[in-house]
Length: 245
Length: 245
DNA sequence: CTAGTTATGTAACAGAATGCAACAAAATCT
DNA sequence: AGATTTTGTTGCATTCTGTTACATAACTAG
Image 1: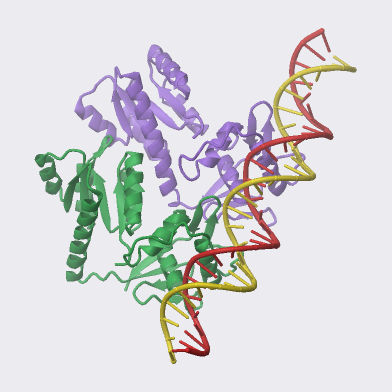
Image 2 (image 1 turned 30 degrees about the vertical axis):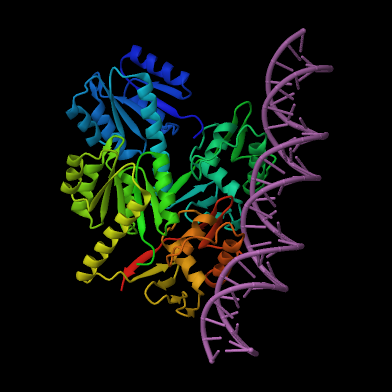
């Protein structure tokens, strides 16, 4: 995983500020949120790797939010609370949190927990993701995640290389969200497990994108699907429909 | 029982790595898991002969997991722990573990325990008339583990060589999990008992895979079942249904 | 608007990984 | 033993993938 995006949910502005700042200094992207609405808008945008959720959220109940999130999304959650009593912790787990940490906490302990949860999530994803075999439809194209087959709008099989398929998967997982080259590279390599971060190599991603374009764009010179975001990276720019098989 | 499948549950990646590697070198198929969710996904998939369960699983409690597993499943469990105090051991047994071993442990001692528990389990299983002769169905094909017969989708018998059969077994035990050539080789040799002198030899696995493909793939040039994972190894890429005979 | 600067597209190349046919050694069968 | 089958090895063809170099395109400062 390139850079983890962490959603910091706390209704106290000072606390939010402190946590986001700390997380940013330690190499993650921290997104602040004060209530459930903001949480959802971030998560729906699809770029959250982990949620740090305060149990006490003013009027709202963090536990309830956690429960709802768990029911609907598959995002790791660490509960944060000023109450450290054991029964609180148990309650945290009961509603589906991945971890629980009590305020005030040792910053490094928080980091450690975050890392642990993230790595666990990554691994379990790779082990379980065959469960639901999904098929993606976009712009007339079809990608069957189970077989890896790609069908053109005229239902002709198109052969993608391994790397190209991996790229397509990364893109499909992040529609409409510009991804930097580094993010793409890391996610590509993350296929197996914590592999070597082959990044910093050069223009490999550019070339790879070009190759994928040649295969799935009607007019590669004028990409409609895989657009480039100058100064940033690339975006999967069309809508996706997902169907379970 | 051809090759025992052992689920290694530990939240420490290094420890997981070490144990799985050791077990594989000694003729079992080791499946790594970091948390209860992964444990369940493996067990539900029905391919686990034994669980090596660490008592300390980060924030999850191994004892609790053990208790739950015992209540729901009938799979042998060996608890592993850094704590060797007697009361810990007792607690391990209390929750239904079949055996208890303290970290750091003598590898050979672990092997001995594993074998002991497995043979006990097998014996008791046979008393209950639960046959372990399974038949695998995949992509229209049928493999009878008892007779070793392989039937094509049109019910024609296909003759596989010893080596090819062994390869098929290893693959069937690890569907959807990319295996390196070395892993495959080790597991192949582990069939009988002898050590693994044959690794590092060369491209034997590649050729063997090719031969199996020629026999079970509709179009060997474009494998649907036994796919290659470039830079990694090979994967059995279709779902498997297992039926008891 | 123009010239310079930076980012991106891409063809060509090279190294690595894989498929596979052909051969040789080993094992198994008669 | 001789024949047959199986299995590993080798060399070459093919495919895949990252790098490099140069061509364009997009931006910026004047």
